[in-house]
Length: 259
Image 1: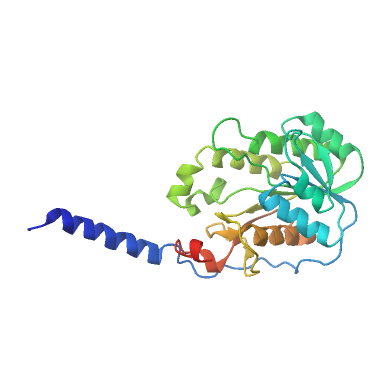
Image 2 (image 1 turned 120 degrees about the vertical axis):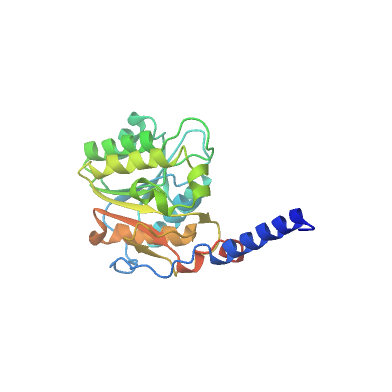
C-alpha cells in the first residue's frame, strides 16, 4: 500500500463520522404516567438545596412563578442574588453542616425538600453523599416527608447507560451520587430520584419527559429538567420512583451544539 498512514487516518475519520451520526440513536422510551405540572401552589414551604444556579435556580423560578413559598439554602460565602431576585427567602447554611439544615427546617413547616447538590469542581471533597445524608436526617427530624433528589445517569444500576467518556469524567461523582440514592431509598421518606444526562443551558422546549427505563440516556436542557422535577413533586404517583429525564431530541451526540 502506497500511503498506509493516510489510509489509516481516513479510516479513523470515517469511523468518527459514523459514530457521530449513529451515536445515541435510542428512539422513544415509555413515559411515566404523571399529571401535567400544576398551576397552583402547594400547601407549605419548599426548601431548595442548590438553588443559586443551574437546575436548582430554574426549579426556584418555576415554583415562585406559581406562588410557592420557597426557601433556598445558600452557603454563607455564596451569592444569593439569583433566588432572592425571584422572591425566594434565603436560609444561610451549608448542607455539610447538619446544624445548618436543622436550623433551616426548624423555623416553619415545610412540605418538601428538593436537592440538586453538587460541586463545581470535580476535585476535592464532594457534598453529594454527605450533604444528602445530612438533609435526609434533618428532614426526618423535622417531619418533612417529601424529598426530591437530582442525581445523574450512571448512578447505581444505570451505570452502563452513561457514555464511557461521561463515566470517566464523573468517576469521582457517580459513586457519591449512588450512595446518596441508596441512603434516601432506605430513609422512609416519600422520595423521588431523578437522573439527568448531560445538562444544557438553553431555553426550555417542553418535549422532555420522565421515564422509568433506566437504560435510557439523553442530554437535557436544565429548564426542561426543572419542569420535570416540579411535575414529580406535584404527583403522589412519583413517590418511591427512580426516573431518567429523557429528551428524545437529544440522544445523538451531534444534537448538542445544534439544539
